[in-house]
Length: 466
Image (tube, rainbow, N blue to C red; front, side, top):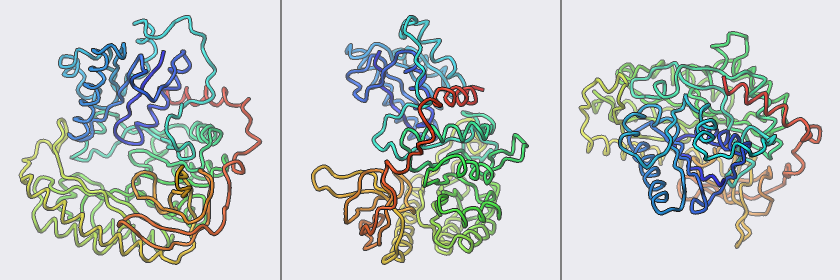
């Protein structure tokens, strides 16, 4: 059976899809990147905002058309949007054979077996890993360390889709990182709804700094990047570790959402503008070369022009390296949806455009100060035609912070030292390779042999199945 998988939404969904594919591979499923060849198409949906829901519906309808044409036999929709809207989807999309929400994924294999989609006689395979990678950058991987969220922000439906925050066991997270390293990972991006909450629910003394120390000790992965960390979670202990450990990259994705205390209060955010300013100042004083990315929402109910000006003032003052900005849209079931959505869409779009233009200038200024600097980088790919090496500097996260075009050659997956030559197209760098720090073959630890893989896989699968 050939399986085509469509993953929508965040990096946490990517992790889930890789895990589901590994389970299918254990039962005779074979992944195909060509949907025309797929016997089964599985869509891992996103339900975060309206645009994501529309994208998920479009993907399901496209898979349904392929089923009607006889190209595939079975269509399965899973994930966040299904978790929230399963009953409506079942009635509106009869072309889908199986709907499973995020909390029901333990039923995937039994359901496909009972429907004859999987062959019950197929021999179980001791698949070498709990995750089956399907992308084109095997050296860049995502490691989810917890599930769910306790924050209850007024605009966010994630707790309704993913439940309360649950940290994964530290030993199991390390084992999965070891598996990713054996699969070729050179950079792991730690993801959660809020990394700072890691371990608090277990009360065993293992919080984010302890997890980072365990990952440093238990793997030789040279780049560890932190994504999605609330400002209140930036502790002295974390900053001390970041300042001393070059393998923990000087980079944080720290969502603030707004700069007006009145709007932050209505959003039910845990911090205020003074907290954001204080945490950023502390971060930059301890880790001087740190790059900080954030996200903002414009047009939340009650946002006045004065509120928006306070947000812009904060961005001007703090000067984040990158900002992802969005217009607010009410989500059913959230406390924000009970508020009058009183900011007209034209005003939301105008504010979004103004914020984007402001941040474009700030990003240019923050990036241009790096010209002439000697900095670490990673090669993501080599152009087949020009031979040009393309990758990122340590201040650039995969897929969201632009690229770096390198003068000089190094294989994909290599770590290099380079001198920044220029900034182009607002968000991209040109850099000259000075030396290759590590080639891909030199990074893999020979001590970790394939014989240990099934044990690690079983342990980690058990953890995530709880």
